[in-house]
Length: 192
Image (cartoon, rainbow, N blue to C red; front, side):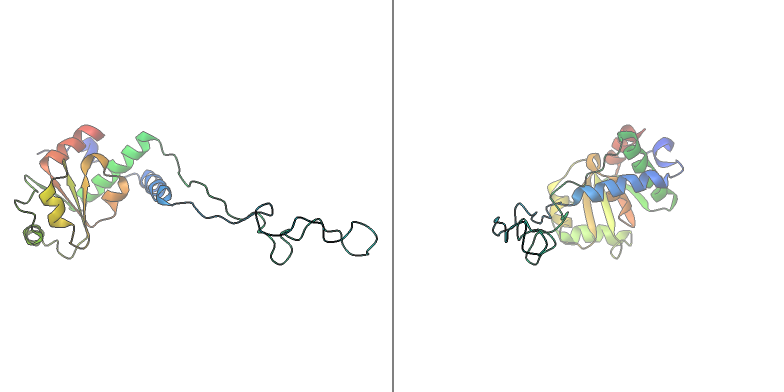
């Protein structure tokens, strides 16, 4: 199989990789943090004492932020952390990471990556052949085959990702990328 120079041989653009990865990491956040405002916190809405004539400072209610048991001033409210990144920037980030992995000899292409049985030992044997048992490996496949999924899910530091949905972070967050020929063809077509 041939690696397309426009995909696997470019000069990496670190800023595009940063934008794509930070966008993905931000979108993972739940953003469900919340605190009560003075309209939501429990407590009476009555005026504690009259406006004039007592000599004390004027007070409207007992749950304003400056009082004990009061609300939080400008506290957190639920919101999304999504950051928009343009499609071409995301694609350039993926090409940059792939080019970097190829230049560092951290990209292995196999004609067949699917084990014949769903045994973990069979997939571990494949990793031992390439001295990858102690490394963090991302496995790119053209289809999520059941034997591959079952054989790899109990191995530490192994991440099986369909090549169509592999993000810049998936490609970056590993020491080695293991791919089959069909997935390389998909990358050549998708990113060129």
